[in-house]
Structures are given as C-alpha cells and as structure tokens.
Image (cartoon, rainbow, N blue to C red):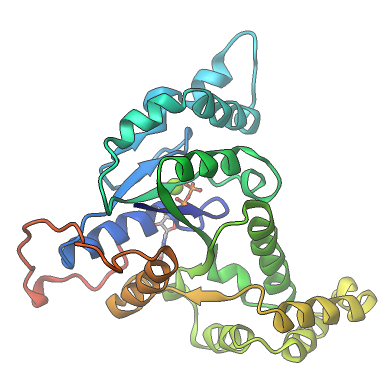
Length: 280
Ligand SMILES: Nc1nc2c(ncn2[C@@H]2O[C@H](COP(=O)(O)OP(=O)(O)OP(=O)(O)O)[C@@H](O)[C@H]2O)c(=O)[nH]1
Ligand SMILES: [Mg+2]
C-alpha cells in the first residue's frame, strides 16, 4: 500500500507551507514524506518536490498558446486535464510502488477544482488504481472563520469538497498563530459545535442574511451538528505536538503504519535548543 494526502484549500490558505512543514516534521521522527506539486501556476514553495507538474506543463504554456488564449483559470483547468491525459508521466515520476510510500499532493488554490469539477476526482481515481490510500485534507485560513457568517460559509465550502470527492476527509484551520486571544476563544466556541451560539453570532452581525434567513441558518447549523458532518482541527505549525496530533489523526484515517515497517532514514536529531520557534 502507498499513502497520500491530497492537500487542498483556497488560494493562500497555507497548502505549500503545510506540506513543507510536514516533511520537516517527518524528518524529525526519521520518516520520509515526499511532496508532489500539482499546481501548474505555483510560484513558490520551499520543499524539494518528488515531482512537479510544471515540468510537464506550466500554466503559462496554456495561456501563451495562440490558439487557446486561456486566462489563468481556464489555463489551470487545461493543465489539470493535460496531466490526466498524460498520467503515464505522473506514474513514472511517482516511481516504483514501494510499500509505505507517503506522498503529499500540493494542489492548486482554485476551489472550483474540488467543489464541482471532476479533474481532481479523476486524479484520485488514478491514484487509487496505483495502490494509494488517500485522505483529502482541506485547509482553511483560520482568520476567515472567526465570525458566524464566515464560519458558516467556510463550513459549506468544506462540505461541498467532501460531497464532490467522496474521500476520507480532514478539515484543518491553518495559521492559528495569527489569531488574537479573543478570536481564538470565539473560534473555540464554534469548534465545539453549538448551532445556537453560531446563530446568535450570525444575528449579532446584523447582516441581511442573518435577518432574512434565521431559520435556514439554524437548520444548516443543526444538520451539521446532528450528522457530525464537518469538523475542523486547528493547526499551529509552531507547536510540534499539535502537528504530531494532526498527522496522527490523518495517519489513522489512512491506516498508515498499522502493520508496517515505516520507512526511515538515518537522521541526526537536532539539538533541542537549535530548534526555531517559528512556523516555517
Ligand atoms: N503566520 C503564518 N503564516 C502562514 C502559515 N502558513 C502559511 N502562511 C503564509 O501564508 C502565505 C501563503 O502560504 P502558502 O503556503 O504559499 O499557501 P498556499 O495555499 O500554498 O497558496 P497558493 O498555492 O497560492 O494557493 C505565505 O506568505 C505563508 O508564509 C502559518 O501557519 N502561519
Ligand atoms: Mg501553494
């Protein structure tokens, strides 16, 4: 078996940073995690990718094509379809089917790819055929979740990804280090889902939505709570224990390491004092 996290989320939600931090975290516990970049428009990430879609096709290739004349979003969709048509390339880049391979797929930030288009789903079907257990990991910037209406809309976004991909799924709130104390405590109240609290908050925002759709918001909140549909795990990358917990949650879902000789590499533990207390 091979293992994959499909790391998704809106633009700038912290996908690439999450990937590079997980690689470092794994190194600290003498494990190997690789990252594959499948964002054809990626400009910056600080991990060494196992494979990089930009070597197959770059979004500029699609945009600069005289006949196609794509804009950035159409170009992205074209590139993802091109990747699927050239899946042999990806298969070769992923290498031999080695037991306990662990790969993060750093995805593009256009959310429509996950909420209603089929390309990512087709990609996951391919990965399943190649013996991968996959966990969908959906990242949302915690700063966009700290008031009632935003929390509701972030929850609905996560839900549409879950419905569209039908994969084992984890939602993560990123950039927890940027929240103020008061924002953090507000978020804690939402995370322990209490639709009533959320509703009161939505109403307190005096939004037209809150006034006109009180019962709808309440119903959505209740459905989400009753069916335990959407949960978010907060992640502060500065906190090693938090990172380890998140990774363990995902590994349990993937059934990674259950009966395995987990792949390790010789690695010298850094001196505790040398560790930087920063998120990257
Ligand atoms: N403070 C803080 N900043 C973060 C964290 N994660 C990411 N960032 C910053 O947020 C910005 C976007 O992070 P990326 O990791 O590039 O986000 P992304 O989701 O890969 O972005 P796209 O690929 O453009 O969609 C960068 O400036 C990061 O340094 C975090 O946990 N804490
Ligand atoms: Mg990125």
